[in-house]
Amino acid sequence: MLTHHSRSLVLLLLISMVSVAENGGVDASFSSGERRVALVELYTSEGCSSCPPADRWFTKLKADPGLWKRFVPVAFHVDYWDYIGWHDRFARADYSARQRQYAEEGAATAVYTPGLFRGGKDWRGWRNGETVAIDRQKAGVLSVIVANNSAEVHFDSLDATSRQYTVHLALLGMNLRTAVRAGENRGRSLSHDFVALNLVSVPLERSGSGYTAITKLPDKSAEAEDIALAVWVSKEGAQKPVQAVGGYL
Image 1: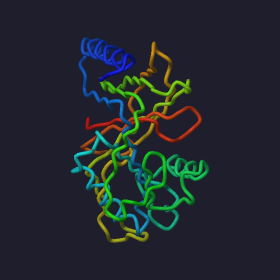
Image 2: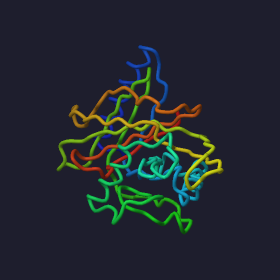
Image 3: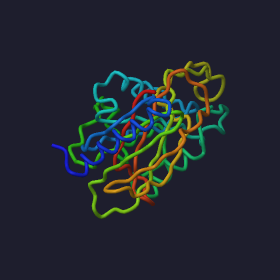
Image 4: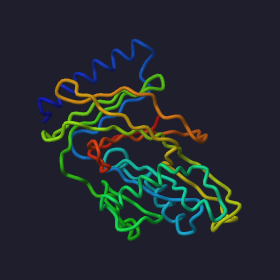
């Protein structure tokens, strides 16, 4: 059963969708529900010989029935392997800094690749073939409307102690391939999915009983025919995700 806050958010979302439709139509809309959806982050590099197995595991998530409902995957390519001879075209220093920030916050004991985080914590269960477990804790409804290269975000938090949130939007490239010509993976053809092509973060503003923000979608740092969007919120000043949502565009 929806709470009063959730009903208010749904009404606001419907009003927003009507408004957007009148101005050109809705490209996509996503909603998380109240139960927490896990953000699953892969830190990887085309210059790392131990990363391809993790990349393949990530690709298998496309067929997992829990995709977008139970978890939202994002592959961040780090740049600290570029020095050994192969420049990863998807790598960004910001993604390396994000992984280091997790270590500084105590979510991981070291910075390494391939590194996976589930719900903001270092997770190695994927190596044993584990699936992403259901998180039964409620976190609030996160909804997103995408139209005309912009996103309207609404978050109905269930945490009465928090007053400030930041929303993060990552444009994801799917079905990407790279012929690696140098470094540890020289001569290999690598496949990637859910690759973060860019990331933007903006503060959420208080709006009635919830929070809202309107922002442009991130620009693509590399071309990809198939695109998805991952959206998550975190408390201001912290990196751990509170709620996530996403889907194909």
